[in-house]
Image (cartoon, rainbow, N blue to C red; front, side, top):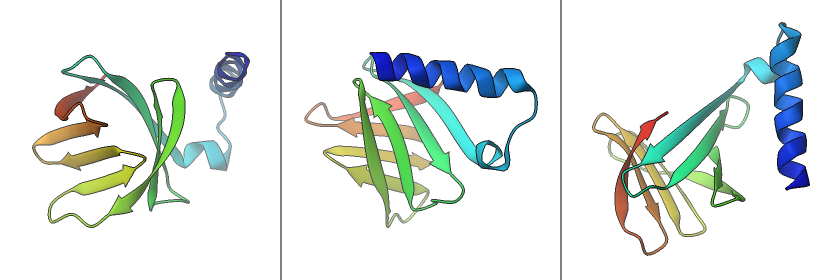
Length: 103
């Protein structure tokens, strides 16, 4: 919990400063809400395009980019994140595939 609070405080300071450092400007954070009630935040870093970093169920998980015929697909630790023209889909453990929307 302390780490989460520290992260939020650091994020607030960066946003409040008004000027973004080059490293912060190269990051994309996106929050998602899924049809089954799951919530997660994904970070896509420009300097690390082969991975997606997720915060899901209170844990940080790094997913590696995998081959996909259409769109992009990331997998790791029993989690699959697929993003294509049809939308964003999450498979988390044995829960099955669920559609997600950006929040």
